[in-house]
Image (cartoon, rainbow, N blue to C red; front, side, top):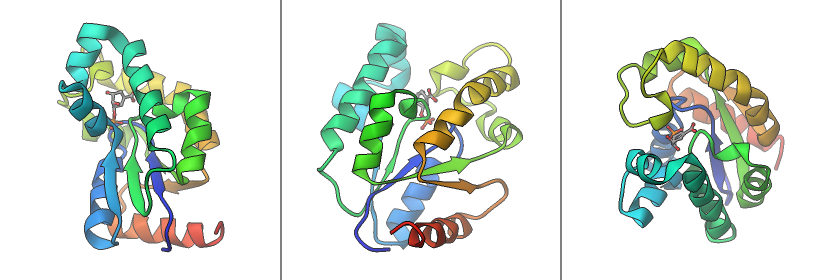
Length: 173
Ligand code: S3P
């Protein structure tokens, strides 16, 4: 793939960070994760940010991050937090930053991957399956609309998903 930033969007547990790291190790891309970027800048975890300042504060940090990154990166895979594409402004800026890929995964896959996870404030307490289903039904159309390309990921290897992205990108570039 030639110089282009790849933005990975999708639900928590859809494999954005794993694929981003794989592409960085195997396909010559840089890698940036917006959650890690925010945690480093704030010097506290996402859980701590939500607990002390709430979700809206975190969403403002996400919007600020996308603004900051626009025009600053080249040949980098950017894995973005699962809720970041919800704001319209972020959708517009993500498209300026690079090609936006939605890593689509079925709720069953996500439930398996997110069982026992303690790092995501939105999934804490209550029934995990219900939370995933209701967030997913509120978000799936947003992800589809925000994306240039959609790839299905259930049961597929990182290499297979990367090749699928590459083939679909060729038709866009
Ligand atoms: C969130 C997803 C998380 C993180 C935060 C909120 C969301 O990122 O940004 O916990 O609203 O879906 P990952 O998608 O990397 O887990």
